[in-house]
Image 1 (cartoon, rainbow, N blue to C red):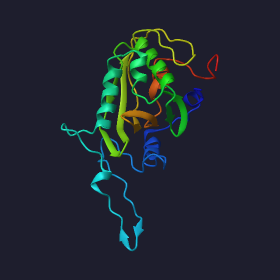
Image 2 (image 1 turned 30 degrees about the horizontal axis):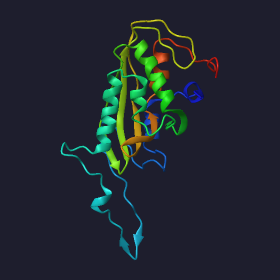
Image 3 (image 1 turned 135 degrees about the vertical axis):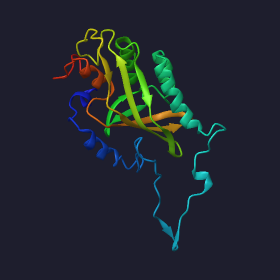
Image 4 (image 1 turned 30 degrees about the vertical axis):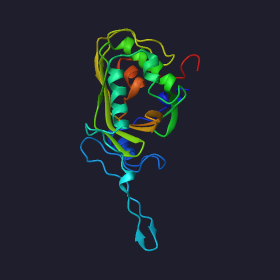
Length: 221
């Protein structure tokens, strides 16, 4: 279930950003980070010699505050995470508890497993914070979070997956950023794709940062 997390190849930020520039074709054709402006994909299809242009209906409709409902849903999700909410509150943002989450193009976990691992993060890092870059609905029902970075202080035992817990080190960590796509349906997350922009990201990055070892398959996997 978690094999992708400890068999990942080490990546430099440059290699990861190269990956960011070529996301899955079924996801979105453009990804940006905080130092670049987001660009929307353009169709090159022509009909009877005329270029097909987008209509106003193709663009997400912003609310009075300038954000679309889907952008607000993603924003609220991270507000909820930063409030260290219970597991069921996190799962409620997904269309189902089995909603898939991919990491670097490989299926990594589902909404339930994600929420379970986040609860472990809360237990080990009492000030764990998910810091978001820009949140933009780049096309209908596809929301791009261009840079997500996790920070925290290791104040309690922390266990990732079934690996041995690491006792509190009181070490402050800042993980490498991630780029996230949220695929929406009826205002909820039908699926999520995550691309690492460095070698230490997510729960496994937190585990390694405080001295955890992931040299083999965790017990019970």
